[in-house]
Length: 287
Image (cartoon, rainbow, N blue to C red):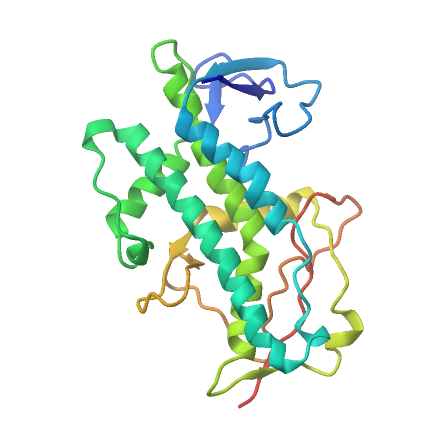
């Protein structure tokens, strides 16, 4: 099969290694220097380092990410106030389908990353309905340790393995980024369609529900940080796909009148037009 060409921007000289021939796995600098792929995107003029690796699994996963996943998620999140209540179950099902897609692709990346990192010592991956630190804590310690390795030196004997692992982790970040707003939308629709105590839309919802906030680079970094400490969880019933739930169990999603999925509620003079996040409005719970 044809090799996968990877482009990277030059990294700053590492205080640890004394050179810039390393891969930055830490989330603060992740994706700042690449990877970039000529088959799917425009290569920045300063991405001058080129590597080639051969992996059929990675080739297929990248094709799915760029040709199927991102186009599917790079669409406007529906505004429930623009739909009749009878259509809300369909909106919930739409969100469920999106999140299920993101979960399956994320599981693929997690599994390959752990196997590539640990080789024959890799544990058996947990089943789909056990994905999450609540049910598989040891597995997710491995997943998060791989994602937070810091700066890893590129050596000749391990270069291809480290580059491939770098891309599997990169894909997890991309999946989290694009799926985040749909997870908030999924939670919103769960509240609105709750058969016992459904939430209601405030009267001001329709006035601003179609507004988009484009996040600045700092906001995107914060979103990446949030995603990096989140991991996929599935419901114990198996009927609902997973959402990104906090790996630190002290976090909870509030349901009072001040809570909402205001993911993109940030303003700054510098914005990033490629951000998939947009403002969501208040959901008020009937008490």
